[in-house]
Amino acid sequence: MGKGEQLIFSTALIELDVDRILPLLSMLENHVTVGTIENRFLYNVDKWLEKKTEFEPNSLERNRIRIERKRINEKISRLEMEKKQKGSTSNARRSGPSVQIYCREQISPRLHFLQDLGYIEKSRKGVHLTKNGSLLKKALVDPLYEQSETEKVNLVALGDERSLLDTIVDLATKDLPPMDFENFKTYFSITARLYKLSGAILLNYFNTFKSIASRAIDASEALTLEHFENCLLRLSEQREMTISTAGRGTKYIRIRGGF
Image 1 (tube, rainbow, N blue to C red):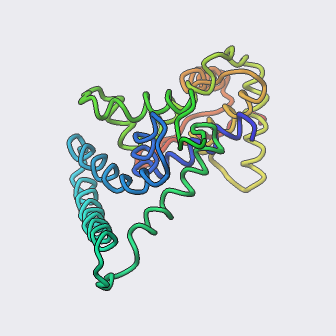
Image 2: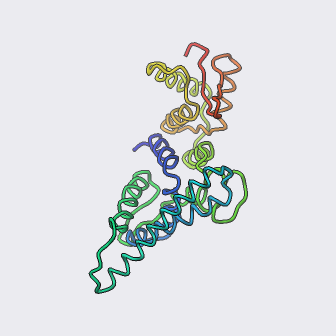
Image 3: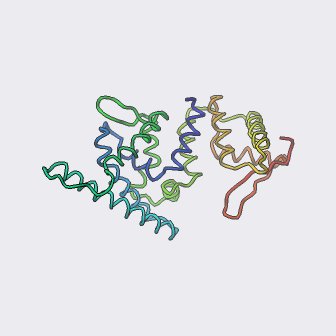
């Protein structure tokens, strides 16, 4: 997988699965066996959700998290019961599907994704974070448990798209020179044409950023979100495009020039 593709998969995976991937990352600093991960996964998810409720401003979202925690705690109770039954000579029947199997099914594909993206490695000693995985954990996970009250930490933990993109792109491009504006215009034009061919009138703001940023990485250049916004400002000043904001705050790009 190319580095540009890795950026797309990293952001997509974490955005969609922030409340499972980040608790999983929190367990992998040192070598840990898959069995240990399976045994501790639900506890870590519950701890993560508990921390989120401390600063989640939206009451509906807080209520959703509480409901999710209730389900997780029900599974934890059943998991503990399964462990007791396994350690005893009792032939008591299990009520419902095995929670241990559930944990295995939850963890296995996520570990494969993280390994494919280069964030973890597997060895005879178990699973551990790579250098990039440690940096990702340090940026996305550790601040939440360090009782930080900074706005950026809160937004990252809440799955804020901008904060996640900022963090992941910065990690992926830290040693690369910034993208030249003329190259940006070329890649922006390619992206705009693809949108037009699909019948789109407006370009999704963050999807456009990810598309161009991934192309930049493959060309050994860096396009941070700040640089992307500066380049868009230059295009706007040239009357090539404008930024539109939908009613719920979603940003779109409206093409005005010859792209």
